[in-house]
Image (cartoon, rainbow, N blue to C red):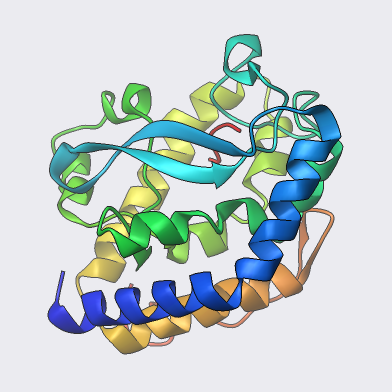
Length: 223
């Protein structure tokens, strides 16, 4: 990670936590009040150079959801709570990952970190993505903003995820990393926000071209 990228992460994550503190507090109260369960969900993910770390999220599923289905969220998953569905739609459940960014486990922009069971299936070539610091968003996240709905249309969603979606995400991330700068990172952050605003109920509308298409080059897992 370059010094400029780390500086952007520190400034943006620090400012974000301060400015968003009231929103984070409201979300925490809503999550807790729905079923009395934990506010946060923490799960082991595989980070930079294969180092495990625990990711922060607002809990969006019922307590014990991991034992009641796949490590993927597919379509209208019955494990997702009412508040959780709203948080997922707006991606507010991801905001606690600003803490991961602040301590250096993640970056604002980088490959979404996977759970160990899926990383174990990586080929030697795919393992190159572990040389990148994982992030809160990336080009692949923009392309696959409706991933849950896509998986719901499959008879075997886990197979589709592992054999088709994961390889394509890795391809996109490696291509992007080859020419990434602080400016392209800023573009990805803005494009992520734009795509979220342009999505309604999982239906993705038209969005601007990616850095790759513009010449810059080129899971959700539970809960």
